[in-house]
Amino acid sequence: MAIRKIVNYPAEILETKCQEVVKFDKKLAKMLDDMYDTMIEFDGVGLAAPQIGIDARVAIVDIDDESGTIEMINPRILETAGEQTGPEGCLSFPDLFGEVSRPNFVKIEALDRKGRKYVVEAEGFLARAIQHEIDHLDGILFTAKVLRYLEEDELKGVEAE
Image (cartoon, rainbow, N blue to C red):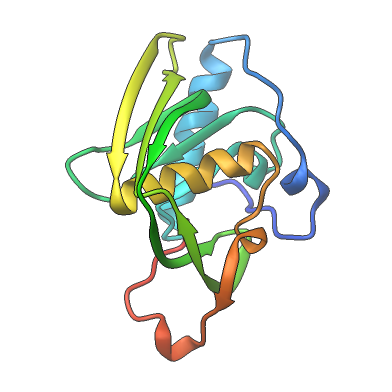
């Protein structure tokens, strides 16, 4: 496993719609393992391939709850419902946080590291993290959705995604 370098804005790859993954091999498995180690090293709750400079529809989320680590390859949002507004940060925007409104519920379909299809439903913070990472794969940054930026004293307990 290796810690990868986080790509910071304004790198072009962060605003690029990523390529679908077609090969499910050891290289992909190593990338996923490296992404997990990198996310943990930088105290994130999610990481998308473009954030480590790779043009691939691959993202991971781990909000440190019973859902464990969710590896999403070629994810598609099937359904959303409700609304939540809360603070978000991003490892590609160090020390920048904003209030973002997103659906409170999301249902996605994705592939795992072996190419098997699965469906996951999430609510609340997990739904927020999943949507944030899928946005990365479409070249959409959280700054495009910020309702207002947050000051440092408003950030107690906010984690970067």
